Image (cartoon, rainbow, N blue to C red; front, side, top):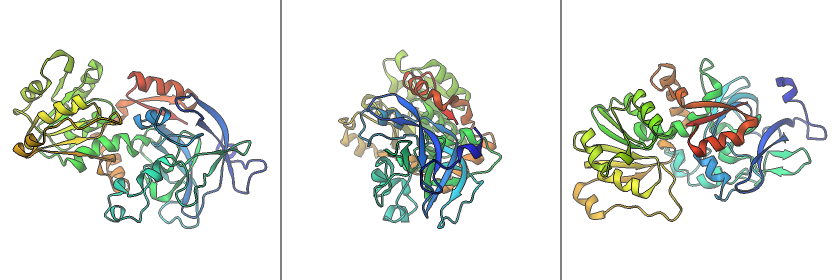
Length: 384
């Protein structure tokens, strides 16, 4: 389908409305259906983007399941594409720009003012509400006129076209492979940012990374960028352990082959680690990660745990060793600054995240989700 066809005005729609296709979720845990949709023209601070590719993230999997999002909805929050139209108030972007879409934020709260948008006071409403925060409207409808929630993470990018705000779109160089850049807006950003921005790993440090999915492997690559001396990965999947070593890990341990994972990590490093990162969200794994820390060490948490999970650490042990535990959101990233840095690392050959990617068609989205759930695919990307 040509751009001209894709951007045709829909019969009976408002002037400037755009027709496209989207993967719509209508029931919790249901399958996605590819439907004809109509998008409103962008408002003053919004942009219309023709999607080139979008990653499938664990958050999408969770929200497809029991996480309470409004239905029907178009998920997808690792989109990348080409700007087709801009609202009258947009100043940074113009038609033809290549952009990566990231999480949304209000831009007005104290944390946004401190360049910490991932801790926006309105993060949940802006990213999981499914509608425009101001008036509760949605820019998308089915061809029969029924509304579809289409503001998931400010983008809802499981679609051929989307409406986003200028605030959550970042211009990127046109010589980068646009169809696979979308994961830089969440999964890759979270893993790399947790190492570079949050834990601030530096030259000579020792890092243990628990879990070698897209987030964990991105952390491995970032730890090598930071020139860590020891990068230890704990992962049961042998293929992912092998890939971790190829991407720069100095050791890759199988937690099933030892009765004492903590001792194995300490043996692989200088008696422990200065930094640990848990990407699994599994309380028992978090407890092990905590025990690998050297005095004054830091443990970062980015994996999504069960809703009733408690932190399995001993407070007296924390005090005695002076260690810290903190959860990180989106790798403490300011996307407008950090995403261009990540693209630069990729183009320089230091962040080869394309090795994690497996491409699918939009029509194969249900298969992509199945492959994510079973571990067959590390980072599925729907190429539109």
